[in-house]
Amino acid sequence: MNVIIIEDEKLSADHLSTLLKRIDKTINVVTVFDSIKKSVEAFEKGISADVLFVDIHLADGLSFDIFTKINIETPVIFTTAYNEYAIKAFKFNSIDYLLKPIGISDLKAALEKYNRLNVAKTGFPFKEIAGVYETITKQFKNRFMVKMGDNIVSVKSEDVAHFIAEEGIVLLSTKNDKRYAIDYTLDQLEELLDPKQFFRINRKVFMNIGSIQKISTYFNSRLKLVSAGLSEEDCIVSRERVNDFKAWLDN
Image (cartoon, rainbow, N blue to C red):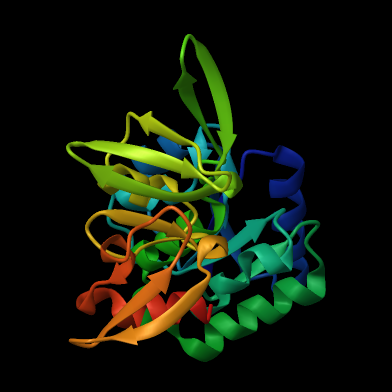
């Protein structure tokens, strides 16, 4: 079995190489790359292996950038310092991950899993994994700087009751009924707000889950909410968003 190690810490790379040889002396470590740049350059020139051992965090960025820059179908076993809770979603898509410091029993199990699945014949969904990782690690906006007269005020996202678009501007409304104009569109807010906390109920309003006082059915398969500071019309969950809204509440 030929393997390539992508790891920017020499001691970690050496440790992994030693363990691989202890498990199976026929395993050949083709090379070790310590950066995204060097890895991409080598893969572009045609270097290959049966398995890649890839650390998620490299000195020049996230190793997922390698797979977005060049098409590689070689299966991967991730090595990472992240705890099991933070990366458990990877288990649905990857061969396996190894939590640092790597133990020989875990490494042996990962190699056995590779052999059992024979994934080299089926390819590997890097894009899906990159998407999962991005979702896990994404940092959502936790405060907004707003203008109040001649002063600039910081408003925590958790203190926002809702955002509403009115007459070409977006207003931030706080839980204590203060309103501020902000320099974001609702489409931009969709990328910035924590989806566990905020939901766009219609084309005009983003709602904080903590600001919903009451939910009731409404005609034409819609839902009607009650929330302080919003009119009845603005509190209607549009029909095409109802199912997603229910799933959001149950998350």
